[in-house]
Image (tube, rainbow, N blue to C red):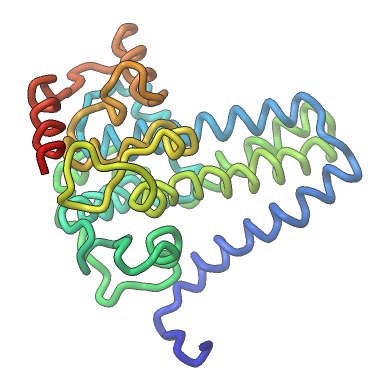
Length: 293
């Protein structure tokens, strides 16, 4: 089947990075652990960087910038711009443009990660090939006016490399010399990128495959507690597609959505405001409408 691959459209840089980081994670990381073991500092560093980077994507890239579900004060905005870059999922400008196009054209050809083209395509395949012509950034005029967003867009690769690889290596070196630096690079750097990226990719693939559709049957997006565990609360995807400007994905108080709890907590200390939420009556009406189908 190799002769059917459109090599002229392969995004070689992205493909090499995605494949290379996975290869290092399944080879170099186990070798490091075999020879040097895993101390509490490296484990804590990995958890910290996964958490900070993951929330910067769900809270920042997704709910703040793509959907304008709330407003954030400058310190929080700058933080998610920096640590969101560490996921190596490109700039907020590009990410939000693609995601808004996904919502507008979900399950159709203009959807960048259209699940109807298969699980692999929605998960990672869409990143391996260049779109011709490249889609314009014509759906993010609001973000183009934000000088911090545009600054990140210009320097995103430098920021990503610094936050994702240099910072954990330096912290590891301070802790345990060159061994600590190597561990920081491999575990809190490379392995963290793989984990955070595939958690994000699951939102595009598994959250359109696994679960129920209690709010709308108009598209493939589904609600799943299981997927919420892997996606920082983004697993209630059917709700999100029906009510995309709500700062919550899990609207019920008991639903696992740590991103909404974090946004709400930040609102109590003045870092966020203007939290948008759909009226309970509207949500209930949508549930009853689906139940009657």
